[in-house]
Length: 217
Image (cartoon, rainbow, N blue to C red; front, side, top):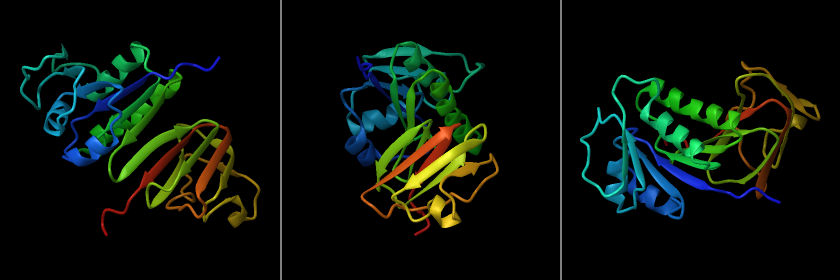
């Protein structure tokens, strides 16, 4: 029997104010958690909030009719990481995190580690905003061209037997059937989809998939 999909949305507090993107893309049937000032984006977008998890160092504690979990400013994890941990602990297995990238790079990298934490716990996690969608591939992934380009990196360890179909750069471009990625490999940077869908598979290891738009245009 297929495992029941339980979806959770986390709205982070990165310096992104894109309410239209949030309204257009959020799954309103999911359990919605605001990480600290992320609640402001949800309020502005007129969206429901089920839980706020925060130390309220970057925002004032709101008077809202929802669950509020408050932490001390002196804590082990960031508010976004705590929100993701809470979702995993409550049994959610498909987590989308909005607005977790941008601003301070240390915060962005910390949010990237949410992917690793979820992966360790058998949970799907995606970081999502207008210009980036970031996720992990453990075996096989099929996706369409929602962003201008995509890049692949070996995540936390080497990857072996990587196959790419439906894109401009494939293993065939290197006269190979499959590719092996070291952590330092960069030859899968800025690829783009040429077919209706792109298919990526990896035999061993975990790939970091970054779909992106060029914001400099």
